Length: 113
Ligand SMILES: [Cu+2]
Image (cartoon, rainbow, N blue to C red):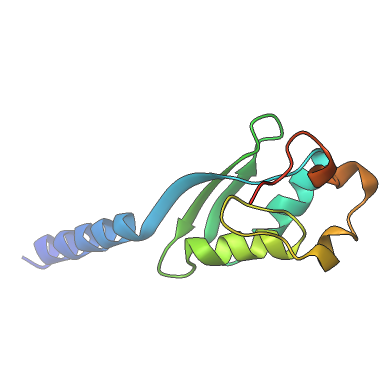
């Protein structure tokens, strides 16, 4: 009986755990491998399990625990290091500090509001 309860409890934990893990994709503007490092570094926080930005498609793949961090916070983290997302614009004061190669707003992939 004890074993049965233990199995049941761990199964329930597994179930609730599943519900809080969110995997999603959104657009993040950037140019190069330096951008990639910067963007992924910004997501190196508790609650985010996977953060992978694709240079070619500009798609950000994240897997995170929605109990620990919200998707909005992730957008804010990335914008805070100078990269626009499809939801949040980076502050100009941070953007102008980026190296020349990273100034994506001057390129084809400019963010349009
Ligand atoms: Cu760059």
